[in-house]
Image (tube, helix red, strand yellow):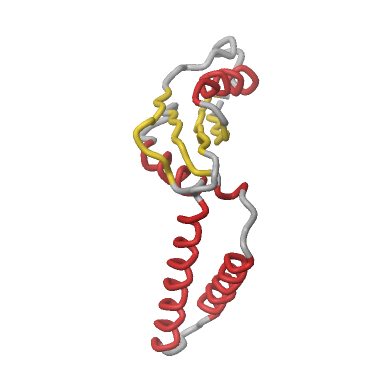
Length: 148
C-alpha cells in the first residue's frame, strides 16, 4: 500500500474539510478504514500567496511528514486574461531559458548576459502579476494525502 497525494483548488474556506473528506472517501484503502479522512489538516488564515505556484511551494515547505495536510489562500491570477505585454514577456523568457540550456561550455560572458536577461524578465513578469492580483479572486489550495 502507498500514499496518494492531491492538490485541490477550493473556492471557500468552509468547503475545505468537505473536499478532504470526499477525496479520502473515494481514494483511501477500504481495508484500512471506511474511507474516513484522518483529519490532520492545518488551515492557514494568516497569509495569502501571490499565485497557485507560490501556494504549492508554501505547502511543500509546511509539510513535514506523511499525512500532514495544509490549506493556504492564494490569488488566482491564472484565471485572469493575460495582457499582450505579459504574453510577450513570457515568450521572451522561454526563449532566453532555452538559449541558456543550449549553452555548452560557452563563454561565461554569454552565460552571464543570459542569466541577467532572465532575471530582468522574471522581475518584470512579477511586477505585472503583482498588479493583476488586485483583480484576482482569492481561493484555497488544499494538499490532501491518504493511505491507498
